[in-house]
Amino acid sequence: MCLFQYEDDPEPEERTPAGLLYVPVRPGIGAGAVVRLFRTPMGVRTAVGFTRPERLAATLGGGQRYIRLSESLLRELCEPLGAELITVDPTLSAPAATATNHRPDRFAVRTT
Image (tube, rainbow, N blue to C red; front, side):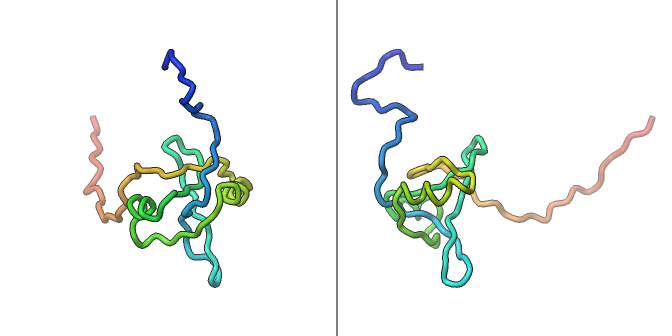
């Protein structure tokens, strides 16, 4: 915990407008798109937006589709879905999951 506060340090809970965001989407019905929701490391649902398309591509890959939305519109769309949190410019992500065909050989059971 920091014992000192400075006038120029924002509070962690302080909301500041992010402007237009690049929001990752997945294909929807017809030509539409659906906003992708994510989870924080603690398991809380969150909407994600990026301030630049390069940041989106660096985190989610170059093939990730996106739309431009304001922070307020993104919040309005996602709150009814249980995502009240908006994460802007996340940089850390887990590697993509890969399918494996690994099966344990056999379970050893001991009898005495």
